[in-house]
Amino acid sequence: MTQHSPDATTAFTRYIAAFNAGDFETACSYYADDIRLTIGSGRELRGREEIVRFYTGVRGVTRRTITVLDCFASETLLAAELESEFLAVTDIPDFTSGPMRQGDRMYINSFVFYDIDRGRFSRIRATVFQRVWKRRDDPVSR
Image 1: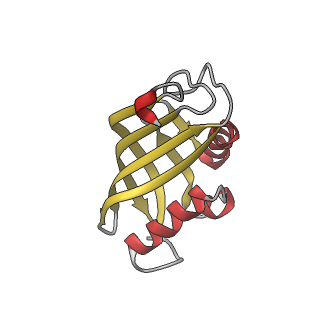
Image 2: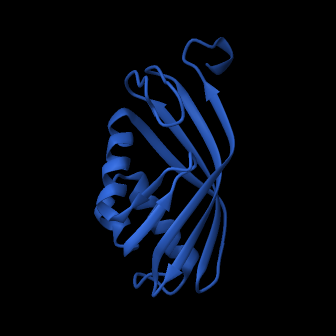
């Protein structure tokens, strides 16, 4: 996939690990210069700077962990089923998926397609399959 490894799924695992660690410098090394990302809400982000700015904001108010549930790739496309857990570290009245209060958790199961051009992601398209909220005051969530 990238110059980091000839094995796309291994490289993808490294990309997700960098993303989970907040190492956006490494994560961005997997992006083409003109990267376009469409997140699950349908919003499109263009370029590395806009993507990093968006996810830095998300990271400032949540702890997010992405788990790869399944993944397969060809030379030009990688498809993955991902689960993201968001833990609100502060109240977030305008969070992209809906308001969250400190301590709330949200799980998103998504399908993501990564177009690969010359070994880098040129376009990423995500769609949400399932969204599960676990509110901090919900006794079932504890």
